[in-house]
Amino acid sequence: MSNVRIIARLDIKGPNVIKGIHLEGLRVVGDPQELARRYYEEGADELIYMDTVASLYGRNNIHDIVRNAARDIFVPMTVGGGIRSAEDVRDVLRAGADKVAINTAAIARPELIGEVARRFGSQCMVLSVEAKKTPAGGWEAYTDNGREASGRDVVEWCREAVERGAGEILLTSVDRDGTQKGFDLDLVEAVARHVPIPVIASGGMGKLSHLSEAVDHGADAVAVAHVLHFGKLSLADIRDSARAHGLGIREIEAEAA
Image 1 (cartoon, one colour):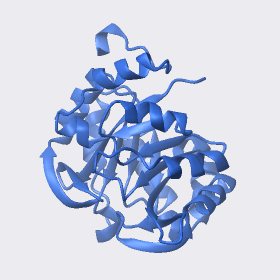
Image 2: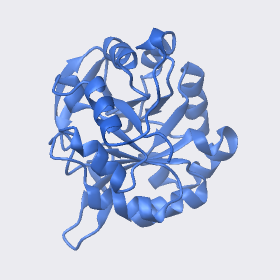
Image 3: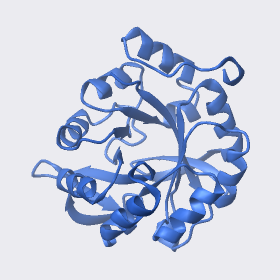
Image 4: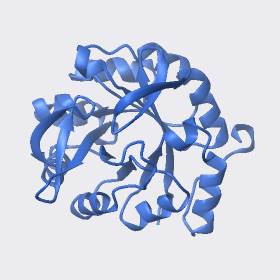
């Protein structure tokens, strides 16, 4: 079994890291550079930066944040929000990102997934999915930071994205985001069972057992935000819990510990 990845997620609005509940009611929680450096030093396997208003305002101003982080952070960085073209991807990668997470633009024009995968490699193309449970069962994919319904079934959309070249799925439960009630395990399992690529569970981490539950239901990684930002759990706690559950994790070199 490959190592489970523990990913620190930083939702960005302007110059700040913010956090909300159900992707709404956003609170400023800190400086992106300070938080990224801290999480890297504490053992995050990767970082995810999501510009929460880029799609809404048709812009992407996250490049400077990524460029600054890339100087002293040496784990993979995924960047999402407002990425609409292969040229946008190129610019973000040049700034220092390793991967891009695309949601709104991919739903608007699914061909973008293949364009990015062919030009930069599938490993670079992360499909970002914002999922909300539907009354009839199942989940619908949303765009614009959980604001707009797409009419797309989450599982079918993920399967199509894989066929088009996506190399990873960032699966965010809007219903669980910021609640600390645990990941939507049914959602994680439904997607993981139908795709052959890694799935990152996002939205709902609140206690240590939630990590192993997500992995047991098919997640290859978990994205953590609220409990880190507000000091409720540390990365050391989460890493120790993963070890205690027999999960493989990356060993940290002494200089980055």
